[in-house]
Image (tube, rainbow, N blue to C red; front, side, top):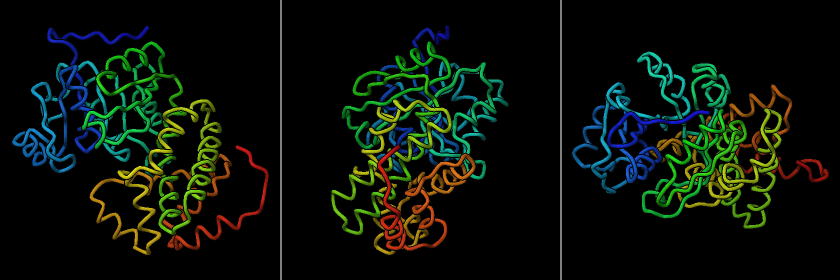
Amino acid sequence: MAKIVSSNPNGYKIAVLGAGAWGTALAMNISQRHQVSLWARNAGHVSGMRKARANPMYLGDFKFNEQLQVEDDLATALDGADLILSVVPTAGFRGILQDIKALGCKLPIIWAHKGLEPQSAKLPYEVALEELGNEQKWGALSGPSFAAELVRGLPTAVTLAANDEAFANEAALLIHGANLRVYHTTDVIGVSVGGAVKNVMAIAAGISDGMGFGNNARAAMITRGLAEMTRFGVALGASTETFMGLAGAGDLILTCTGQYSRNREVGLQLASGKSLADILQGLGHVAEGVNTAREVMRRANTIGVDMPITYEVNQALSNGKSAKDAVTDLLGREQKPEAI
């Protein structure tokens, strides 16, 4: 039985690593119930947040409460913590795990970033397994969740998956509260795949919307995208049922339709003829689906999974194919029975 036991006389403390929009929104929400140290690598960013008691760079003027402290020193952020919540970009996940290990810290770790590691095409749970092993408790937090809504107190529900069932329950209970509802599961693979692949499908949905194809086409794209996501996940060992839940269909629907979706915005702008470089420069935030499309295709080719939507999105992102040609080729595929 894995139990998170706090050594703090004032209750639990959670170290949130990564002060982007989502990391900050989670830190602010959790600080309503527990002590939180929010860490960012950039000392200038941290200094600005301390002065403003907010994160205007990523999340506007929403004010931090007194239970949330901001740090630029990792050891200080981890000192006295009971749980680590990593919200750094997926590309930096291995590095932050190595930094944590170098400090001799063996605290349980939950990550809330999505995607595949560049070059290796490994999902975050595979990186965690390589860097931490199975003895240290770890897991993934994912689901339909825009930072801009969570920080406004609007209801949000997510899923926490961990490599130990008792720990999954304990960690979910720790994060759960106020307007943030946290379910739990042991299907770390399924939750990780859902969080990664949905960003690719959101780019596809944005392209469809940007070309004026309408609601029918968007619904078809989401549905076939779910089938594609499920095929990929099951091939890696995930449970089919996970993709019907918050971390699968829920997150996919939100990211393909929501106004705050950066990945959908990439698709919309690709459809308008803008270059990817100009789009990314204008966003100002990370759009995980851009790198994820390439890595998912790398992995799909290795395990022999057919992913036509992901293939065409990657062609548009990485190989200079026009959005119009990508959609034309996708629609021109041979007729076949509907199946996952």
